Image 1 (cartoon, rainbow, N blue to C red):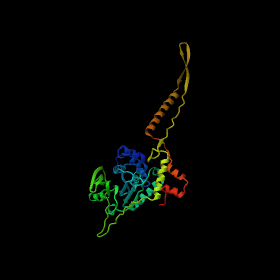
Image 2: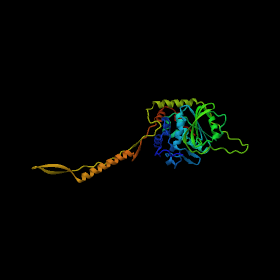
Image 3: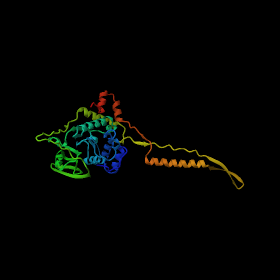
Image 4: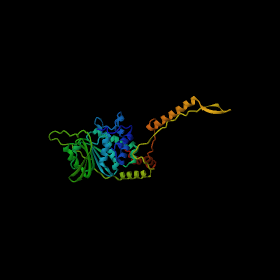
Length: 363
């Protein structure tokens, strides 16, 4: 499912196209999409298709089309401090974007059927935390992923403010999903080939709204023999943050507030096209004389060579203007300085504490 917007050359180009097509409509969703490069969640050798508005699947690894994810992010109406559950969390791409919005005092859990995909998601999350400059521009709620079938979640599990299910839900499982939602919460999931937003308005009342026509693979149901007990999925516990975590959050927040203001939060370094150097033509003139009455008057006239050079210069100027309009030619990437990390590294602290403040740790 996808193909609703034009293909982009890079992540920012893709987001520009999603905005133009009105799939991304709010600033916070735009910032989250720009902060995480979709191509980083593709396997090597497949990245060329990352910025097309198409779904991608390789084995158990799957990514929905960008237009689907953007509609989901908008429909969830995310706010700092909310709890989020991703059923069929896959690569962790969506969960990581959600974590940038709900912040360090939110809850971010994911359930994924395939163990190899959970390991893939954890590796991608670790890479984002350690290597992405975007990570340091946000306060982050790190996703926690567990292996299991989302149709086998323990009945005594806690409820969530926001839930997304990334697989087709049959009508007889709709109420099962609704029970996991807090009153006032929002559930987004595909039902009957429609991406649907469900808001829980009371203990036993809900409001539904169709968002987008979609095509999702159905939820996988476990095949069990007679009398065989289900493998119950225990969701991660909701815990109070440790004093160490709180200290790290507030130290980073303080350093971030002292850093120079940056209007490009969540956006990659700007690309500046190099201007093409225009060939400078040397103009030559020939002296000649003409009679005016009975006087000989000197007069300068252009030679054929000068006229040819002049025409060539005008042609080069037109080419330059066309290049600037198309934004083609060599591209110079301006490297941005990660101010927060530089500030932490400059602090008179033990290296182990600096590593903790940077979220670096052993796997």
